[in-house]
Image 1 (tube, rainbow, N blue to C red):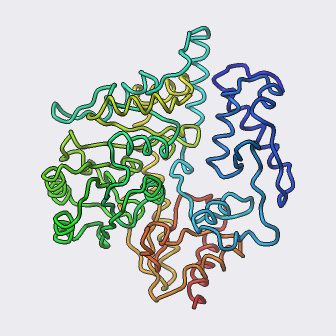
Image 2: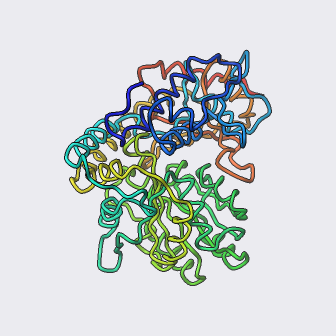
Image 3: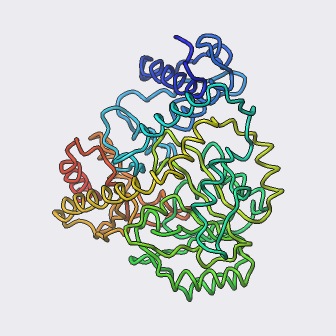
Length: 462
């Protein structure tokens, strides 16, 4: 393989090489991949580049790292795609990635309209403009231009403002959330989360040994405020994690007055608020209220990622936090992310040029159109309760009668259709009669037939 023309794109070249290697391997047998050093020598790139490419594949579940042995392709089981008694979330994600499978469980809004091509073009243009620009070995908190662009975007008034040095960028959402929980001394404490809750958030809290209290949302996306007040008085809550605008995956929209009251209670008790802004820009209502509009800025952390809006070429996660700067800086320094400065500058250009705003307007329109298209298909079946989401990329469906959603999952898997059962969005086994159904799908496929298969599987479930 020829050496990549621009080192900023080297990891993409290595990634594509490895994908071809994996796809050419036998499906049901385990196979060892080249070591980091072997691959670097073979492709004429740095070891850090090969390490980053492997990390992407590991995040996607295609490879696994074994200490002292190296990287291995994850073997698929023979016969069916079902992974037996393993973790349900792992089964959903492993099967959703297989060729020929229709993933009704997908969670990729940018699948409908991405900015990946403009991002790559901007990156190439920056590489041409500054071919000999001396880049530091690494920028532990992120590229300054991108940090400044995010600070500007999140600033809305003299009271609600951010500075670039209050923004931290990492490899992905998982990493920056883990660092934040440790830096703010929240590991091992008690957290209040909306339920249903993002599986990624639940897993990160579990990894930090945080005890989670789930507060259920009603069909309109609201909490029982009296119950919330009682919980705050009875439990030693140190952290609350809520969606900034539309509740994900439930699809409701908390009224502004509710958010204001909740923030008042959190401030009275000195409770940290982690605002999940991953889908914050994908609310269909104009100018929705966000928790950060009312929260105590001294106990506020906003987290998000670029990939939901831009696409998989922008996997970085980021946090904005005004307090505990030295602790965050120390842990980000220790983690030592090696992220492409050119790619980060290209993302920054999407923001400063306002290209992102035009894209978001078009993406929201696409999401709304696909939501209505899928709603028409769902309305043809009388087996579920359907609430129209106020944004985001999915429906939150409830079966009209008690069903075994595991049985539904297994039945559909045999037909090469993957769903996301509702229990994935609770640590406590809630939402057994629910599922998340995405409308960010490959609409070239027969979605009507897939919905018919889903309805039939629910009807036949014990």
